[in-house]
Image (cartoon, rainbow, N blue to C red; front, side, top):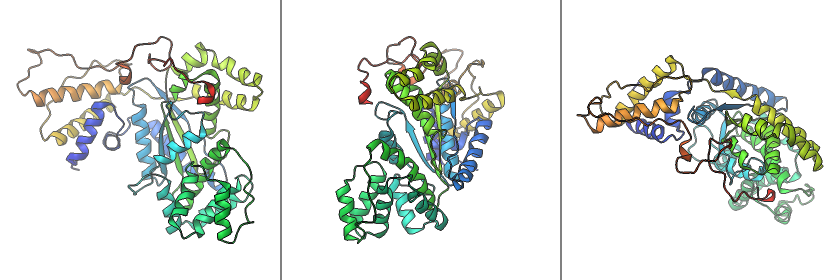
Length: 426
């Protein structure tokens, strides 16, 4: 099958830059057949568990920098979309801290993708729910909203969305599900206009609790709109190593929530990626495995301590990305050669491979091949023996090349900022 030149160019440029790319994922695959199979199996389990009112438990994958964790998550994203799931990709950062459900919700909903639709966000789900709902899943949504597990704001705003004719009001309901604030007085005013002023008690709650409940509401809405569920892909989990002890401890607890071991969110299944040195650097060397649970218990929060302990065990149990074998390398090389040919309309010659060692990352091979073909394409008279050059070998995180090193950090030597915020800022 021919390769579209634009798609090939996108794939090659993304691989050269080390940026996850759907085009590259579609063409190259993941090279991790066992993890691919495990992921597909869990998608089926997520749908079965949802029918029983439960959330399927996801998993973490671990690997060094350049081993393909982000690429694998991109492959997971494509597979989930092809299987009929909505997908959100989150990258943990200062703006999206793992222990803050409200900020996690905002990021997840903003980037939410659904199959066969170009737009992003919860608006597409809501429009599909209104125009082509799934009767059985819609009934399931109604039952869950009425069983006492949700604040009545969700049932009230869904009723308003179904009944109101004003597009602006409908948009405000969707933005509330996406994490925006919506005053109780505004909800009551619209309910009064619709003749249901006394139908919903609108209990008091916190922003954090509303965000946690939204993570349970959205997958039900996704299913009611006709898709199979909602997949969360959480990248760069290792950045919680930069947090203060309290924020880091809470992050371990939230990790347990997202992966499904603690809370019940039917229709949701989450996966994450973390560096392979995090468990040793933070859980063992820094002592989190022994100290975090006790630290939270002293603060009077033993429940979060229990969740944190389970979250740390999930990190220790993370699935390891295996090094590419000869077969995977050969298939990747051949496919990448075809992509380079289509992208630049030429015939790439065979080029030398980097030395194959057990610890050589896939990114090293990919960038070496691309760099070699670029040189041959741009300088046709180039003779490697006459003009020796060194192929760029990436063994550390590209993002850290311009930053001073810091010993003992769990993120590959990246600088830990001096202005780490206080606990309340995360």
